[in-house]
Image (cartoon, rainbow, N blue to C red; front, side):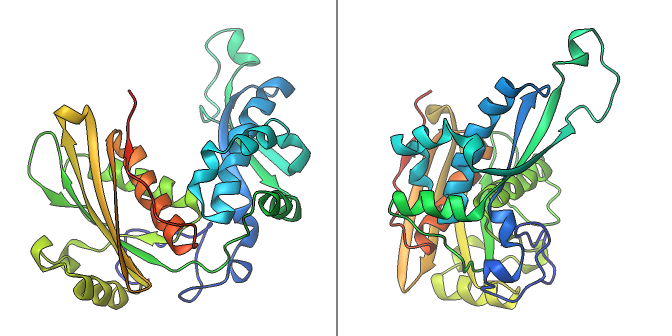
Length: 274
């Protein structure tokens, strides 16, 4: 993909538009990463539970599974569905500062689940694997607490832009979605971003379709407010999230996009309970 911040899909996308997951890294759909302390069985079991939930959502494209009590029961037995796992030192091999650090050191736990077992769990939940994933170009206008409004781009130098790009990349990885940003020179003014123009720009930049929206800091919401829009299947989808961190806001945007494109319905508005 030309001129984009990251062309991300399941670790190293090199495929054509709308590529089938089996043609790229299908196994990466069944991989998740979490953080745990040390290498003990009990700590690993606690870290495996959210990893299984993430994989069920990622493979199906349906974020509503996160709150499904049946998934909670499955997550409690997450070890039954694991094919392999590995650790990586979260502190980058820095020497421990005390005795506790020698055995209770934080680790990244990367887990690969057995695809057939995950697919069977999804079938029991009335879901199925979502295998064909279009490449998405994201056009997000940011209204920060301080400073000027800017559009998030691969080469944005505005305050928080680098952190937001990282947050968006993490959200894309967790959703198993190929998401990319335009360069600043590719961005049209917000008033020019009508449905047809967005679709055309996305294709010019090497994507299949565009997701657009605004992410604004609002004191009355006690956090960020995201208003998202996706034009797909001749329909104009809109949804909102309020009172969250920008990490959670981007996660809401990308998971909502996955929900729509995977055929799992319309995202609902989300308000923070904090």
